[in-house]
Structures are given as C-alpha cells and as structure tokens.
Image (cartoon, rainbow, N blue to C red; front, side, top):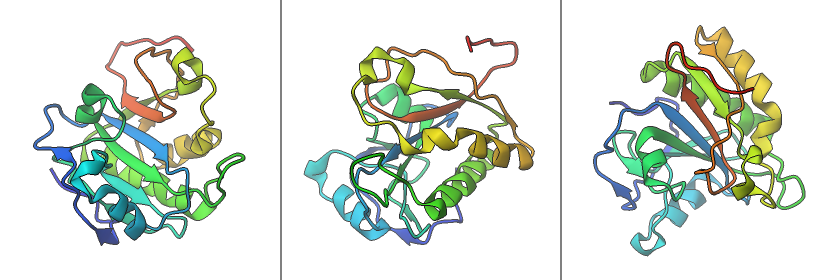
Length: 191
C-alpha cells in the first residue's frame, strides 16, 4: 500500500492503529473548521493525548500533508469501522464560521488527491453518502465541499473512474462529513 505522491509535507502522528484491518474502499472528508497550514494541522495531530488524526490534510494553498500512512487507520471520524476502510482527509477553510468556505485551490487539490487515492486503491466506482440526510448530523455546519460534489464527480469521470453519486441514508454517521465509497456490482441505493 502506497501513499500519495502529491504530498508536500509529512509529520506522522502517533494517533493511529497499525495496520488497518480492511482494504481501502472509502474516502472520508472533513473540513478543519479553521485556516490551518499543513504544518499546523500536523502539530494538532502530533500529541499522543490528542487521540485524533487523519491520513491527509490540505491547506488553503493546496499543499498536502501526510499524517498517517494509508496502510494504517487514522483516528478521524469517531468510527473505527469507517476509519479502517477510509482514507481520511482534512481540508482547511479560508473562512472561519459562516459557510466555512474552502478555497478553490484546496478544492482542486482535494479532487486531485481523491482521484489519486481511487486510482491507487482500485476504487473504480464511488457513492456519495450525504450526512445531511441523517438526523445525527442535524444542526452541524454544512460541509463546504458538499456544494461541489458534481465538480468532484466530473473530474473523477475524466479520470476514467465511474462515479455514482447517489445519496444514501446512514444512521451510523455521527459527525458532519463527506463519505465516498465503492458500489458493489448490482447494488442499489435510494436516490
């Protein structure tokens, strides 16, 4: 299992489980709720008592940080089953509060990173799980990248992956996040 070659900075966090116990078949994307550089995000995940991490982080300048090798499970979504299957990504906001805006530069790099992860892990078809459909996430800030899902889908399509962005209700999701996962052949999800 390899890491992305898009990485500009690396600070490995002790907050992870080695190795992950499932193949990678999801992407879980959070926003940082702050305008952190990849170095600052790495510093947040560095203390062992933090008990939090992500595989990658993206700054508003489009730089990519690696905090947990893809071979290992990050402690990102407060859901061990999800984190064992997902590559987790934290994206910096260029606006704190309000709509928690994400810069075009970081969004573009997020798309590149998602395509790279999907290609390296043989994820050829993906599904978008909308956390807004879950009562567990009501009242949480809307994830800024959700408004760009069709742009993400288009870019992944151009990369010869087959996107399938159906919304699926999942009551187990307990925080505001974007999750993309493969759809098994013949599976169907409500739209």
